[in-house]
Image (cartoon, rainbow over all chains, first blue to last red; front, side):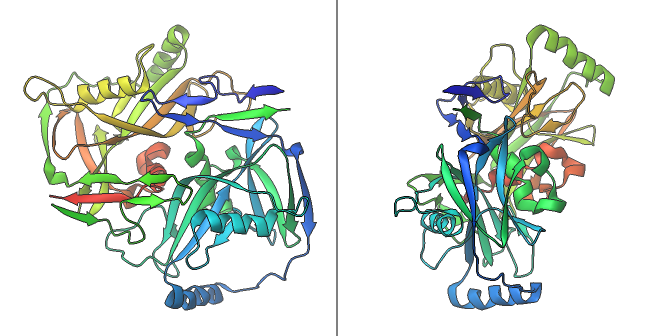
Length: 219
Length: 219
């Protein structure tokens, strides 16, 4: 085994904050450790923006605020951390995840979404997903407004809360990706502040990850 | 005592991530709980950009990579979290903090900087500062390049690392501010994505804070 420390020569596998608490390094493995298959998918909903807003409104009346959970998953390529993204219709980029069911917990829901969208059964069972800490939360204040990383004053009924979690991959794993989606790995340098392509949530992920040392494990 | 929960009606004073780990709420107090005095200051260095780069280079040759530490400090105003910022020359905005001395720890250095810049002696002693977790790190790859929240591949000798820490204020405190600086409190909504005014580090602070519930304590 060859543990190659990412080109971050100022610390070991954890970054000490000197107050006794340490930020644990994220261990990542090479992209070639993972296998990707495609699978048939139900046809994509060709919803217009108006239809999406209408759906959000209808569900809000029944269930209240929507909670979505999304995963930040890293792999190594060219000695650099890359983020796993799904691309729909050659245009929209998404973190893997989705909407919680009423009463479902964040971790339970995120595991369900990742299993449904990306997992392959091995020996009759689905692999477990290691959901780590919450990195950030974004709020949708009105049905048609953009997501914000804070709740503006006096907003008592936000329409959606989107929570971003760190998800750590095991050394090896197989994935299936619905045929309607592309799975991409994108370097953090391409994502950082690239709102136009990736939107506000994804383009902020490099900042949310910046406190973590990254340990690239080559085996 | 009246504990007023910030207009974030989806959780109590901590946000459960359902995996046993909880994100502890940041307790903040009203701006009127704090007193601000001004104090004389040594004249501002009127360094040009070239002089600053030259100084960074000279110190790099002697001490290696510069490490800077900065504080994210919140207070309540109009029922909303506001960030404490220093303004120099009516233009540049800065988080309170500064450069570590060689061999100094992050927390020790940040406490020294906050004490020197903002503290008032009470009964002959300076109040302690509660330095919390590291929220993010930014890297300067070359002497004249911008800060980035990741280390690009193959960079083995970054010139500066800037670390951002959460610093929690006690219920009451007195501050002194050098006459050359203004101390401002700015709502997160004004800072978010406002690169042009606040620069990349400060404008990303709302995202770095978004995972924390904020508990406004009114006494």
